[in-house]
Length: 195
Figure 1 (cartoon, one colour):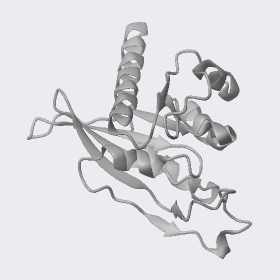
Figure 2 (cartoon, helix red, strand yellow):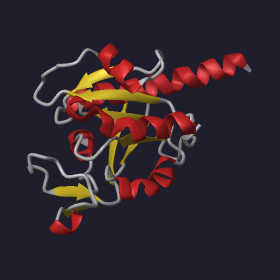
Figure 3 (spheres, rainbow, N blue to C red):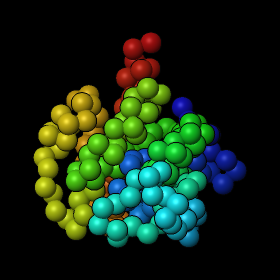
């Protein structure tokens, strides 16, 4: 299910996609945990974006991901996670299919100030049948919304894990990634037991 058997190094590679709306913190999330210098494909937001792309109202975001973010993190048991961050702008959503191909699971990163920005990501992974975890980006540690209220707003199933995280904090990001791996394994085990 999305991962390859261990290679000659004894490592098991696993692909995880990090998605969500524009400006929710995907690039920051990948960069906070990656043990390599993350690959980023950000471009400066120019006046040409006006009327085409979503622009953060306060004007603090000056760049946008135009292809993907890529990072890597090694976990216990010789597991290596390859992280692929999706572009958030609607006009780049056509890339999501390729970025999600072979992924064992996904993170839907949510900014509760603009919760509607993550509807597309939730719909995408539900339609693909990809296990996902919702990570509420707390922005400076402020846990404003109860996870169950977020679940209700997103209309997601009770078995979908919801966790708080600050996308800038490595230990928070690690907690989210562990939740994705565990949720994906639980899904595989329950499907195997049912067949």
